[in-house]
Image (cartoon, rainbow, N blue to C red):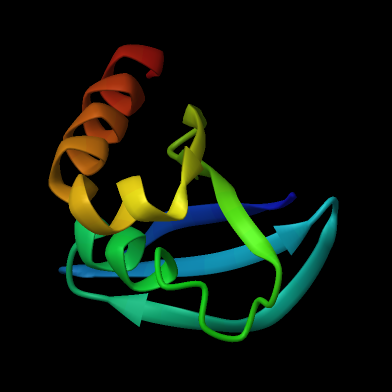
Length: 91
């Protein structure tokens, strides 16, 4: 089981930068998405990350924990909403 970290942050008006880390090392190429859930769903396919079964997902200083790829594909909107609420609470 290989778990990486997906870190999403606002990058401008309706743009979110998604980056993947293996520990503290950036892996892959950062991507831009119009919505947080789009980033989550896109990385739920784990394209370019062989052997990955889940991601630790972070946004705005908060995390929803370790999320299996299938859940990232099917529950991206719910996960996004949880991250936004968590981020607001942490401010």
